[in-house]
Length: 265
Image (cartoon, rainbow, N blue to C red):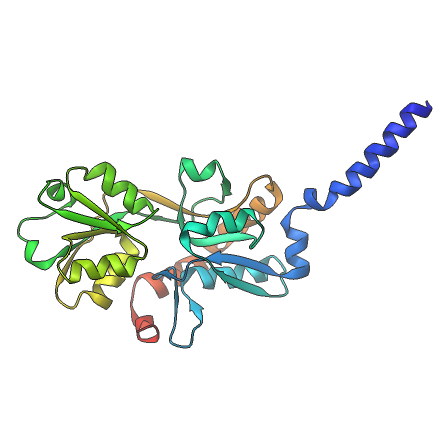
């Protein structure tokens, strides 16, 4: 009996020491606020305006999410893309909200919410190639040079689906687009929402946007593994904003017009 009581006492103490971890992020968020990792260079999901503020579709959603979760404040943590998952896993933020595509490789490291958007890869093309190139398939020749951003699904799609073209990777989306504008590469392969905006903002009449996506990519929010209550709360929040029309309203604001461009140029 004594041994059993000692064992139960030890188990109770062990359980108490682990209870904060079991409680997950929700209680911490209610106490300290919601910290969101994002890279503010992915228009119109997130970008920096003329005043240095991070704006976009994801920041608007983050503000609503913070309110929904009872967070006393919201902190947007600007993070380089190649370090964004490590930042989450080392507790520099509570969630990634940065237009991240849900992939099998990423799911080995993080847990994803249900998709909050479906996007696909598209082509920004040098205007003088418009008569020759009508889709990504026409670029699949050794004579063409294509580009995308390093470490993205654009890079994966370019290498997998346009393998015969010469491929170049860039650290930022803007750099890749400007290489097409300057004629150093023939096409930039990237997500449809970004290419739409980049064509308006930087195309300067020298680019053609082939707007038909040639991949289907679900976008989700990423959190550290092993927190089903946090994940359940996120999916519940997503379901509510889709049902009440808030998601569609924000989608119209950021993806269906470019009025906000005047604040970032």
